[in-house]
Amino acid sequence: MFVQLNTLIVDADPTNREELAHFLGQFGLNVIGQLANCETLATLLSHGDAPQLVIINLDPNTSDNLHKVGTLPRQFPNISFFLMSSVLDPGLLMEAMHLGIREFIPLPIPEEKFAAAIERVANMLGMGKRSKLIHVVPTVGGCGSTTIACNVAAALCGSGKSSLLDLDLIGGGVASYFNLQPRYTIADVMESSDKVDKQLLDNALTVHAHSKLSVLARPELPEDTQRVTAGGMTRLMHVLNRLFDFVVVDSVMSIDPLYQTLIRQADVNLIVMQLNVPSAKNAERFVAALRRMGIEASKIRIVVNRYVKKGWDIAPEEIERVLGLKINYLIPNDFKSAIAAINYGDPMVLSNPRAEISASLLELASSLNPRAVAA
Image 1 (cartoon, rainbow, N blue to C red):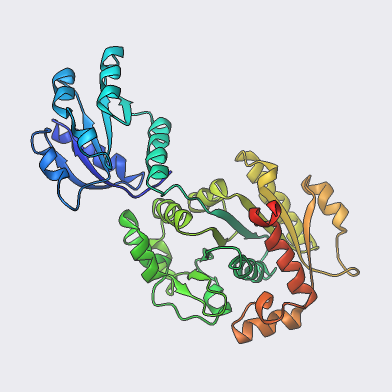
Image 2: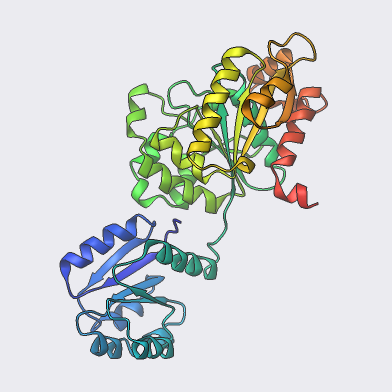
């Protein structure tokens, strides 16, 4: 759960204030001020740049501090007030509710309940939107997962705002596929990962003119990959999830913490393979790892790329037996169309939609679109 809300902290203990500010940063809350008491709170909330959320620690003088909060919640109805205390007295809770307090958080803070409270505030402010996250994972190099990710992302633009993130940090080719020359990359966003917002991403994302797809490219320099961190990725993904209807990630086969974040958050982990022994072995290993991570089978889909009706090394039925999963999609082999799309910098689903491979990719994208399924 990650929502960027301008937040004000009120706590008598300066150490508590700093610790709370750090804790809130993990949820994306932007702490714009810290106060030791409520004396000047009303004045600050009257300004044009008032916070959206005020978090007040009532301890140690719980009852007195609650009275000082007084009419503020009703005086500023557009601001959410959270009260915290280690004292869980029923009378205190009833009085807080009577004053119009949105949430009462017991101390120490229970993270799940706090996240749910933030979610409720986000929904109230119209920030509760969440995209569908599609994580595309190749089982071997050159299996065509980038082609699938790029075409699926471009196709989904017809149903809503879509973005494509290149997380093959060394060898990724998303920008090249669309013939883009981005000014900024994911590494640049990481430097500001503690304050990622819509304005920052609007500057960092490169838009493909034909599809209107927003692309965040891999780092230009291999050494810049070290700037991409799991914490920064978590913040980035949650902001993307609230700005777009669909987020497609062209990834790599890894369970490094950086990629575990995506695996767990993804609505669909799209495993791309070919009908040969190296690809099948890697698919088996990776699917087993996902199961050990507790990923449900419903969030794993198998895509066989470059499928031909004759000439494969391993039968599709054998793949399904080994993986314990059905093959969900068979993408036909059309090397000529795929290379032409790369050379022209335009995805096949747009430049050559009547080709058999384009029809297959459009069908794949449609199946990943909950709106299309509902229709």
